[in-house]
Image (tube, rainbow, N blue to C red; front, side):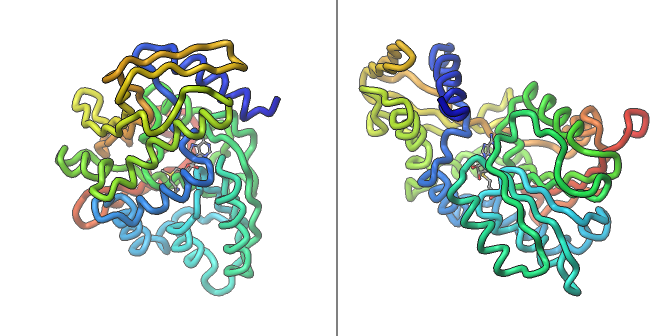
Length: 319
Ligand SMILES: C[S@@+](CC[C@H](N)C(=O)[O-])C[C@H]1O[C@@H](n2cnc3c(N)ncnc32)[C@H](O)[C@@H]1O
């Protein structure tokens, strides 16, 4: 059995039998899910991509200079579209760079890596299909000269405990002097937040439902059909997070033959598929310090919607 299949079986067994049931967001991203996410980034309601692009356009040269990096590792890289702004700055004057995009979505990653290798002749591209929520090992590139980019606000998909674990694991994979470039969405008006996750064209709804297709297909489940679910996006002020749920339109009874599991969800019952935590800069700074990073500089777009923080991996006493 492949590692991925084993992980999915584990996640389904643990998540679907919990109350309320949930699934990890990584299962959105088969090839169709990745392409749908790419469509989301261009939607009028989905401000994060435009805001992060604005920050990268203004500050990529600063990031290159402040980090002093010769290797760029990108976690959850997807198509690496915005990352090209960093690549442009890194390769100015034909400088060489090692670029290591990492993602679980193999097709999109491989295609992006190939295109970038063609477009940037001084960049050595080493794509890795891997799960960033597992042990990261030692990162490629020269210790102390690596920049790890984690863009798109993907950090918000971890809950508080998992985020702390992630920062700790990432810090252990890095050396003192390496830098982290972290894109994080900021707290704002709830209506704008909900609209960003419930667009009028229904693309986010299709993205959300795709997780059902992925699980049903990969595990050969009977009775699990995407059309039996409605997309729901909700702001949870207590946890400062957007939540995406799938609400059963009718009673659902799904059989997972390899797990010997029958999962039931009554009509109106809900399955949690994604959280997206929204931050304040103070909270981010405190969490990064706890994880072994010291902020070098944080930037926001002009409207103050989104943030990009450059943080240096430091020894315990230097946080
Ligand atoms: C919200 S998208 C962001 C994509 C891109 N970085 C951006 O800023 O537009 C999240 C990306 O992380 C990837 N991803 C999600 N969970 C992952 C995991 N556990 N390990 C590796 N990649 C993951 C997805 O395939 C997707 O490309």
